Length: 145
Image (cartoon, rainbow, N blue to C red; front, top):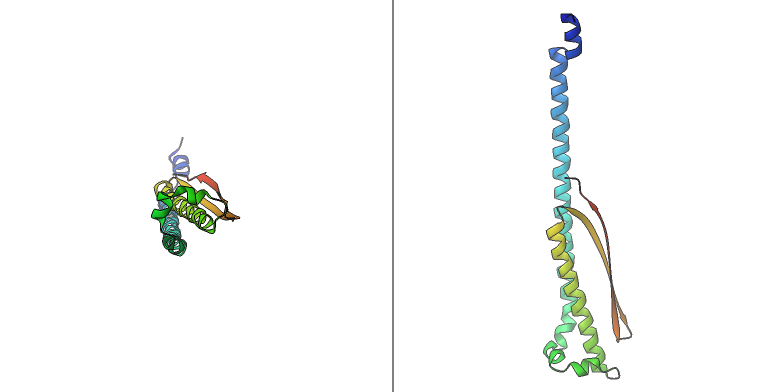
């Protein structure tokens, strides 16, 4: 093989330099996009925390008025179906369960957010003051890392 053929296969110094510059540009762009994704994830988490604290404050205010120690001391009143007091206690139970589940899921998101991109939808329904229904659905995909 001649020197000229080897030079064509290797590429000239200028071509190699351009290829190196292209490679570093691509790496910089990849790094920049990864940093933007991380920043977007952190902003979304801050937004979820803000929404959670506002919702928790709004939900717990009526619960505090029901004197939760009474619920623990007199569970038979909370289970009675005919009294308004029982209905209020059941609603308080439902709200507390919903808020604690929401908080638990938020803590899970903080732990696994780097590995799993997850969103969650929770619906809270009070069925005539007798029971409640919490539906949790997850959608996720493994993040490439």
